[in-house]
Image (cartoon, rainbow, N blue to C red; front, side, top):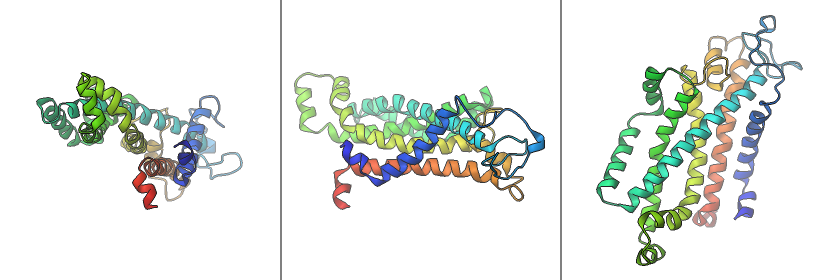
Amino acid sequence: MIKAILTNWSVRIGGLLSLIFVAGALISFVWTPFNVETLTIKEKLQTPNLTYWFGTDHFGRDIFSMVMVGARTSIAVAIVAVGIGILLGVPLGLAAAARRGGLLDELIMRTNDLIFAFPSLVIAILITAVFGPGAVNAIIAIGIFNVPVFARLSRGAALSLWARDFVMAAQVAGKSAARISAEHILPNILNLLIVQGTIQFSLGILAEAGLSYVGLGAQPPIPSWGRMLAESQTMISFAPHIAIFPGMAIALTVLGLNLMGDGLRDVFDPRLRRAR
């Protein structure tokens, strides 16, 4: 399995793109070419050159340094938000499958439908109205939206396993539904969760950028790719580099994660491997 993952070209290319931005985010903790909080007005709107590799913005801040630190913000928000979705959604989905057709199953799935009715942006607006804008509130909003995604996936995958012989044997042996879910169901749906987690991670980065774009994500002076795009929109006609580089960072990161997800799906699903 490991060999199949490492030899898959989608995983290789996606992993390389993702690794570049993860490395940039980690390096930004100890080094950036310039301090992202330092304003150098006399250097504002510099085009890309040997000193400022991605140019400077309207405050004279180095865009390359801001993209590095912005990667840290986007990746952290996405990781925590997806983690919330997995930690809450998977147990709920497994519990619903174990009580299939019962009151608990109906309650969990109807609650999921209710959450799906409100996109992460709307949830973020509601949370912001109460607690104010910020990265933490963006994490909560995206995390809440991820819960029903993983709950539905877990329930759907688990339902097909409850009729399998090895699960029935565990029931005959007297194991509880919770123990069967943990010992027999979860390991068999783990591959699906990994693939979905990769996809939701890319969507989390997009969602964080969107929330920051409208001012609901990370707040100044913390750099954010979405806010960098928002700040550049009035200057894009004469300083396009301000928008190009954070936009490329978002696009390439999401592309890399989606390629990884597509490649992992091919590896984990033998039917797709045979079709190719």
